[in-house]
Length: 288
Image (cartoon, rainbow, N blue to C red; front, top):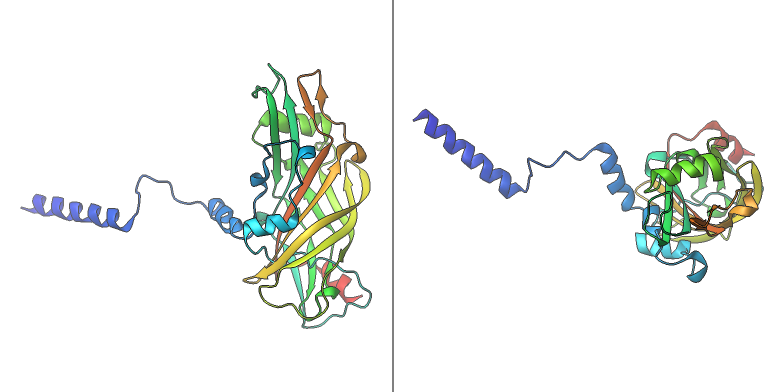
């Protein structure tokens, strides 16, 4: 009798699990997976930029398009108008970039011939490499957005990860040489086109970020097209620019007719920043 009762209870439990939609054989959702889900609600991830046509034969994805596809990206770029006289006070929020929720990537087009060293199918391929090691601080003036400022941003490009380990190795060792020059930085940034006046909840900002980009020990004045907004206390920005590798001192991959990469490549940065962890650098900058 007791055995029958135990079997009945077990049977009922299984029915309850089935009705509730719980799959006992599925792995638990990890914290990192939860982070991916969370960030997907904030912006269009870099991995979605994988191309199906060469960069020079289609319009580059603009920051505005990226925002439209991702939904309202949060107003992260209030990065930076260095207007003199940005005042300090309770209206300024000091925010830090959250690397786990942010990302930076390159988007490049490759052409492979038969029997290439990466063992990829011959023909065109769109390559995307992503890193999530990003740091930097932002001073956001909620009452006058144009007074907001951005500190230096540092990206660990030695951690670029694509869908092919051999590509990643070649980039680190022979082309970008990120094993030797592991960091890219954006310094002396200013935001062009931020509105004066208070930020309105849900407001989508469209502007440009101009700064000095340093990659491969080479400095270049660079302009990013950007969009941003604030959501649930987070500041989110999508910023995109197109660079020529040759202008940054990077050897454009062209290996024995087996592999050729276009000189032009897109750089996409999705930043999520939150209050409470900003360094003293941002606070000192805003107080000047």
